[in-house]
Length: 114
Length: 115
Image (tube, rainbow over all chains, first blue to last red; front, side, top):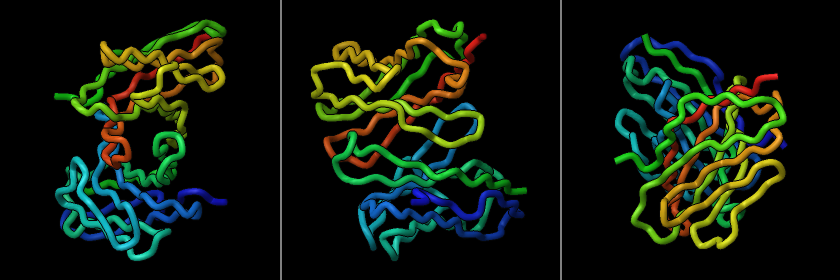
């Protein structure tokens, strides 16, 4: 099993450009999450999904959109990138129960917005 | 107010010694979960240990144990017999609610194990 994978691993954007980050999991997990990690600030939840076709806002949703058309995929979109969105983005998945809804993380995507 | 507070930006420990990483949390929920994750320099997030708010005993996973003091709202991670491979960032996190999906992470503690 590949677990949680993220595409791409690195990306550089210019201000105003758009892009989509792809997260895929092969563990048949119900729940999926997108986080951003900034220096000195830990991880902050952007959006999450509790099932196919459903999404919800997290702590820092502004400037991002998400979609979960298939259970195994969770897409994070930036419609008009800003330098403040320079960060490392992590995707995670989990299933109900388990060890407290333990999250399995992808390797991260490093995004730089110039 | 911060949901998770980790007051130790950096810690050093001698190899084979034990070390405690501090974490306090803030929630009004009766049901919640507490987690510790490890992030090595390679960047991935590795689950270490989980404690539910109704668990009466402290959680243990191998060399990791969680010192859960509910009244003080603290969930400290204890690593026994430190190894060089334990050098990493450590994050405390909380999930509010019995089956909630909102997770909150602390700012992390950088642990360095000295040979």
